[in-house]
Structure formats: C-alpha cells, structure tokens
Image (tube, rainbow, N blue to C red; front, side):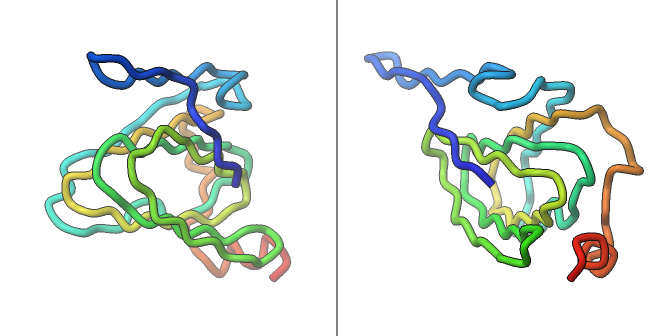
Length: 130
C-alpha cells in the first residue's frame, strides 16, 4: 500500500484536488465506483484482488482500513478526508470499517471480473503461502 498526496490548491472558494490516471494514480483507470449513505457502522471490502490495483480516496466521514499484505504484515489506517489516496496493491486483503455518512470513491485498474476476487480469507492466505 502506498499513500499518495493528491495535487491541489485552496482559495476562498475551498479546496480543489485532482487525480490523473497513470500519474497521480500509478495505473490506467478502467473502473470507478463509490459508496455512500451507510445507515450505521458497516464493513465494506473484506476481500482481495488477484490482479486489480485500487486507489481509495475518502471524501467525507471516516473509516478504518485494515490491510493484510502478501508478506503477512498487517496495517491499520484510520482514514479521514485529508487530500490523500491509498494505493492498494493486488493480493492485499482489504477490510473497511465504515462510519455512517461516509463517502468514498475507488479507482480500479481493471473492469469488474468476479474471478479476480478472493472473498474467502483462508483461500487468500493459501494463495499468498501463509
């Protein structure tokens, strides 16, 4: 996982940040999705991808992102909107604990492909050799 500071500026109208595929985001963007309006604390993600890179940007609210990396290390990141994006690499288990009112956008390197998802944590651990 890499943390990327988003380029932008602030003036009397507020903040403006931008994301360029292949530059700010180190891959070509093939899919964009977002989630909003969680009525209560909820879990999103809780899976890994075999080949898809994701770039996660929190726009509003807060959430905790737990990542299990290929080397077995675990990272816990408390996310608040702060002008950064998180590049989640393939073969990284990603679980998001989302607070109510959160708005999050995810940029993906691949089109949706169910075969790319690993939804069983034990299967993920076997595939990374743990």
